[in-house]
Length: 362
Image (tube, rainbow, N blue to C red):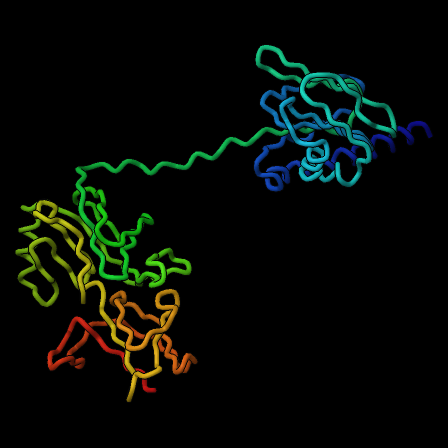
């Protein structure tokens, strides 16, 4: 019978230890500013000493009591300190009825009213802080302030670097694959010969911003840009000039309208990325059959306040959802493919191929 009794006590003690161990994995998630240790248990009368140098909190738990330690310069109230311990260790919140707080160096008993107490001593010497426990306890935990995450620095690009100006049309932006956004006139450092992917974006008219959230729309066409020196540029321009149906060749750049690439001459007197009309964006004018009076067009995240006779720059090759309103009431919606004017749009007896029309049948 005595053997069975001892075996039962051992099993119960083992269950008690195992019940608290899984909680350790929760600490960093529930209190992200502090990194907590695993539970350290001791069910014998042998004393243990732990290194708590740089720790910002620690606690010794017994069956119904817990002693919580903090550094001497912790100005929080005892209740706030106890609350932090409970948040990090659910067993303190669920099973502990008596709490005590020890600040800085010193000695104190655990406030256990249901069994023997443990003696806790904290001392500092030669830059090291130690916490010693004499007596039995169910577990001991300490936490240190987490080291701030160091952002990963992008690898330094190799190769010859030059600066070019990025030009963008009115109320549009150029978004590069590295997350940088250019609204027109800013300088960008690039490596000669390296390709850079970018997209055309319409900004939010109310604040002039694009952020892939509630501000503006990103065009679906991905362009690629590279800069080269003048000798290489001249050779590429000569080859492109033999295929005028595919390439747009100018003094500072060569645009491949099929591959959606642009080569920029970095030795030009005014070298820049020019995202020009028809090749990168189209100016769209919205009208209604009959009269435009009291009839407006809006584009979510771009023209949130619909306008009458709207004229707006939009990314070429993209499909944009546009909305029609009559006297402030939404009456139609259409997915408009943004493409250059084939000649059907006429203003003042002049065909404006750089402007396209969309007419609501309302």
